[in-house]
Image 1 (cartoon, rainbow, N blue to C red):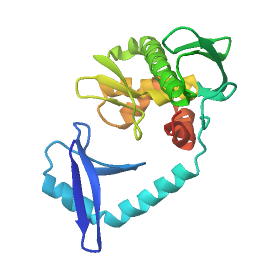
Image 2: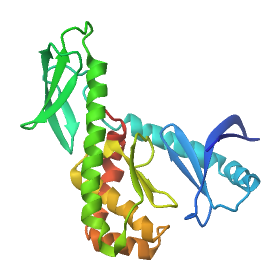
Image 3: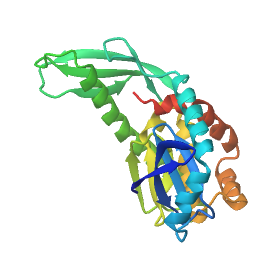
Length: 248
């Protein structure tokens, strides 16, 4: 996807946005999130028509950007400001205490045990290590996200033969997951910060796109077949997702 500048005669400040072609899209729509404007368009619609559509929606986009910025600024971060001994780290809907222990080993190591994070920090490192610890925790959580997501896929894929071709764990600031045209599922690792059932809902959502490449009534019925209470998980993401998106 390439960024496209767009300017309206009423406002000389350009709007930069990305175009994403989708087999599922029946009409062009605009998705505004923190730091990103994405135009989702059907495969056959011309770029000229897309640009004209964005221009016509200029005022709405500006208002939406302000709403997103306001929501992000007022969504509390779940993570500590620095990673030091005794702080609380968000994980699976809980706040987990962090213990840092010095080690003669040369590599930093993360361990999760007895409901706390244990980080073995090399004595040879001179700085306080906050950023290193944060990066190590992110890496550990990405691996754990894959393990948990594979469990949810195994639980739900057999029903209705919803078998993905692949699973990728990604860092995203505007989407929780996606299912590509060849049934490759992408999942945002930040879901691991929320309750496990929230990740399960997103996995189910993307698995159901294997059968229905849209958000039709049949699609939502299939989601309900797997998770009858999916609406409350969807609402949870709408209410608290901005805090998850702030990351560690």
